[in-house]
Length: 187
Image (tube, rainbow, N blue to C red; front, side):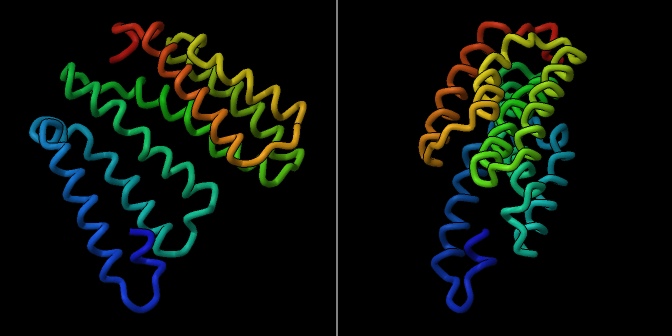
């Protein structure tokens, strides 16, 4: 969709790829769509906001990137719902708060300002507080230790290295959520 909106002139190939991915996604979502579409209709607002931001050329704004991660983390509660029949907004919040930090991590790496370094530390602290309020085990956020250390030390590293570190942290997060997620906190 972003390519369709950005491209001047012939858009045919981009439209075909957009349709291919959209139809593939809908086919893969059939088990969910049968029972869960109504429960998750609120999230259509995120799709509309993202579309508007793309249309206005704001896909690299902080809001658009966080909105993008909000959409990218949506499969967690969808799969959980498909398996259990329970809508887990706590799971969605847990996953979004963790992976949303990646947006700030890239900002810290690209901008290198004290402002973004402080925002990262405050984000990690706020996420831990929200986990506590939602009664989600804060141990799951253990990979955030690297976020805090990296903004204090601020070593030079390529964006690819940052991406690889975030990938490893994501795997650790998934393992931790597998071990420490409680059914009681999933509702």
